[in-house]
Length: 231
Image (cartoon, rainbow, N blue to C red):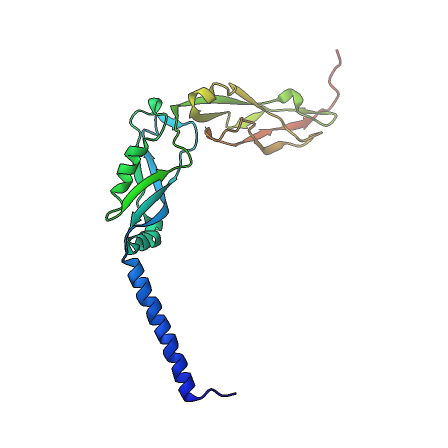
């Protein structure tokens, strides 16, 4: 069934009128004030990270509730992905227990001109810091537990590279770390020279950094020409 030219023209006119009405309604709505919007805004904590370390993860974003006209809120919601993080300074980390919401709100307000910041919400306002410490842990190989085939002996020094590692983190946590970690050679009935990379069994903690995670263990193996004398 074909549509007559007159009917098609009327349909186009209706569509144009609807689009125009929608456009003018949107423009009028965006010009109004007192809209509210909740945005996720980046936050960066500024402190002496060479001397102090947080004992719990610091929030990377905060939720900001702002009010303003539709145009400003629309622009802020579209271009907020590249927003400059607000810097929250922690001048005395050892005595800082929480984020000051008033101070944080005042700083964020500077980044929202022509809008009103109603309140700021974070996953947590609690923070805590400790002094950052480092300690050295020796790496040793359990030579007595190495499994050799009958008639074979270790004929060289047992080398471990590295022979020590460094761990860095909160001082109270590092106190629980051992002075020495012992590597276990998993291979059984060895009869050839050994040269393998083994994981270092150092305790894992999200706030502790370990300088090296693996060690290269090597030693030479020789066959006895005659059995060792028994005692």
